[in-house]
Length: 443
Image (cartoon, rainbow, N blue to C red; front, side, top):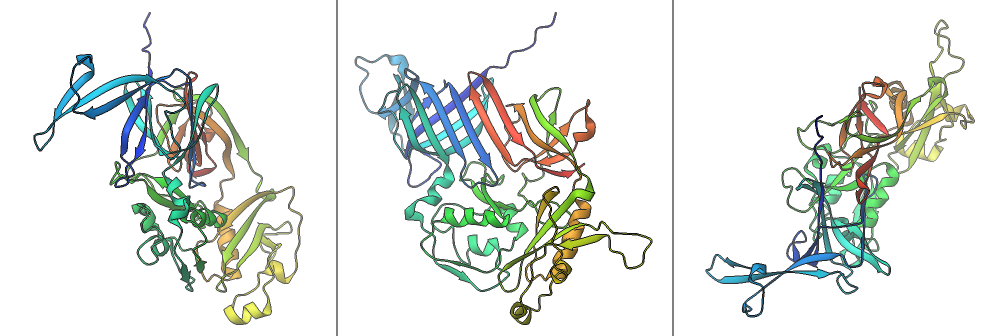
């Protein structure tokens, strides 16, 4: 009988002081290779991801002391020497010590690598924000975006009267929101050139406050390593799930890499997905747009219950619950009022599946918004999935990546999806990743 190979879990947790000249460098690090549990949570809807580390008292860590001490009274096996470029010989001493209440400090840098059989992937970089040293040691950490919410990194005053102000303008050289933070814009985000309209920022907000505020308008900011410089600081990536009438999300990809393939008979540990079948007769799409006056307006589209294809002038779609536009706004912007507002068609949609749509176009009028929303309705995924999927840690996924589901037993879910949220757990119960997949990109 064949013996199945055994995969051994491995981790490397490095904790140390911050290097002011390079945030990615950890000074005087200690290394822990045994842990009770790690939980890492990240989502493209949240700028700041978190990590929670739990380990029992008595956990041993390894540290290295660099100096010119003598060998007297020291086990020679714990000492190595290294010749620097300038010819100076330095001495490195390794020692193993038990964790205690003074081992950790708030603000220290943390790096977590996870994997199997000695092959590990970098899964988290951040800072210790709190810790508990009672019956167990529990460290609470936030990712590198923690720097952006510190008071010393307050946002500069920014004011733009242009309706076509873009993310590149705000985060780039024009307004310099990221200046002095050490962060850059992801190269793919620059290519999308997402517009956010008029804006005014005072110095009472941190950079994190501003980037989190954009999420209200379906413009999401999150951290992502750029493939052009994977060993440097993570970059600020920006994406929109509802970016066009064809429902294709604009999220930074990993270059030319293909979606991660998830085989249900190999990768899946637990399946909590449900096949969602939507009757188009009970589907409504709420379209929202930013007008030329800098204010949002909306219109809701559903199938017309009285539509008769054999009747001249009968419309397939109906606009309901639309925002009435004032005469003053019409005079200033020339923005027309949607039919649903003119006829004051009010409908109770409590029994409908409601889908949001945010127009990426600026200076749009109501008629154009209705056209875009109808087009989005036509292309909306009526037979998708909802829920979550728990997989083993083989793929080491991050938020905002694309995955391809492959299930031979139930092929109805086979498609390419965008991962919204990833919760990674590692420890005595194994290595798992729980992912949510709200958007089907293509079959």
